[in-house]
Image (tube, rainbow, N blue to C red):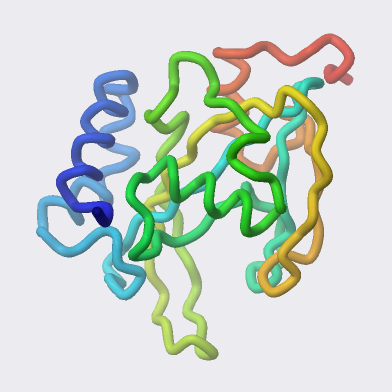
Amino acid sequence: MPITRSSVETVVATYLARNPDERTRIRPLLDALAAKANPTSRTTFAGHVTCGAVVLARDGRVLHVHHRVLDRYLLPGGHIEESDTSLVGTALRELHEETGLPATAVEPLPYLAGVPLDIDVHAIPANADKSEPAHQHFDFRFAFVAPAEHKVRVQEAEVTGYRWISREQMPQLGVAAKLNALVPPAPSARR
């Protein structure tokens, strides 16, 4: 069964129960859900849900991919597809598509199985090649641990490279702070 607005609302409610102080920060997502638009369709240009994977290596660094269109390092992730049945499943599918890491290569971060570590609202610039106007992504970021090393193979259509980045150097400072609160960096990862 495809992901529904109701299932998105349930995940958001669980997220806000754990992070009540973030209601203002994710207000655009809450407004979109209240407007009854389809938040899972990438053609809902008021804003739509995307899903990402925050993957921690054993040494505490976090996997990032270099996004071809946006020309910067981001967490692996992307749009919901009609075949997706859960938000966390979308994050795992995108992780596999962009990095070659299968779902079996990672484990949910304890206490967060099925609940995003972070929900981020960010602007996406217009893309004339895809006839897409500027819009917002409501990015549900699920946290995982990679207990063993696996070879990363990037999907060259969307991704031009990858890096394991220390939390101190992550561009997503809010995500790094949340990770540090749950899993302190390993002593060897602190520099």
